[in-house]
Amino acid sequence: MTLNELGRHTAEQFAKTYKRPPQWIAAAPGRVNVIGEHTDYNDGFVLPMAIERYTVIAAAPAKRGATKIQLRSPLGDGTVTVDLTQPVKPAPKGAWSNYPVGVIAGFLARGVKLGGFDALIHSTVPLGGGLSSSAALEVATATLLEAITGLKLDPVDKALLCQKAEHDYAGMPCGIMDQFISVMGKKDHLLLLDCRSRKTELVPMTDPTKALLIINTNVKHELTGGEYAKRRAQCEQAAKILSLSSLRDATADMLLRARGKMEDVVFRRARHVIGEIERTPHAAEAVRASNWPTLGQLMYASHDSLRDDYEVSCPELDAVVEIAQAIGPKGGVIGCRMTGGGFGGCAVAMVNADAVTAISDRIASEYERRTKIKPTLFVSRPAAGATLLKPAAK
Ligand code: GLA
Image (cartoon, rainbow, N blue to C red; front, side, top):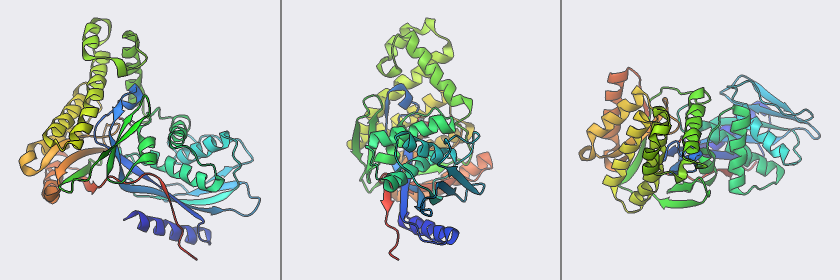
């Protein structure tokens, strides 16, 4: 489904549900990270792109003077109501409404005036697939609230407001990558983001002979679980032992010298982060220079490091990467790695565009034979970040 089709579908569903057309339609994409995993909260580099999968919210004002926001999503458990006369609070952990409600709270904390409205949410970003369905929902909500309130946020500010919603409302101590790319994605470009300075650099991805293939293992992960927070704490511990404020300034030599002062697991976590921060700008350079063999090596090195040192892969992701690597450059696979937080979700492969069908068929059949799980595969061009769609003329 294209973005416009999804927009139209959401508007129709809105009209059916609320018996009037929507006044605003906001959209925000999911993302895939080409390389730079678990580096964002270490002040490192990431290289994501927005994908052609979106969360769309259609909305219209409630009756004059109304003080309730109604949110509906086919995902969920009926209507969620936010009473604007009461302090806004998170729902129990795991509730989908925490993402939009956290963003509403962020706008209210800025002192904006918000009246009641009705909203309907639809999404083509797979849930729990490591493609940032949560950031897409947060950023779509923020884009909608910008339209409703007239408060236009600076893109960095907007991404940070959404990240805060995820921390405070969803209880997930994520870094800044997902919200940044969902806000700032550019068609036909990857985004090299320096998570320390928050400076971004666009990396053109226009070569028609190359494509990014996303392979969903259909194994769900639960990042609000403790493993993510544990990794963060281990990185902080390593930085502290090295007397640094983050692992961004650490080098492999420094780490080796300090090896005796830290637990082996902390050493290995830091080794991943230091290597990955180094690999990411190299990978951006390789894409710029169409140096596909180098990009491939970097992607495989990233996966190995995430599997062995960072321990966030899983047998299903490893199976995908092994199958892709076995197909190799002769069969059109340039590189492949797990993407996102890990523990399930998706792998991403850079492939030759003319071999996409053959590669997809082979990965799907071998993966299913090995794991007894049907994967979902799709190709996406780098998409644009969050936007407002025009409601159809009445
Ligand atoms: C999740 C987080 C991101 C990032 C990745 C790992 O997607 O939301 O901030 O840390 O994991 O790279």
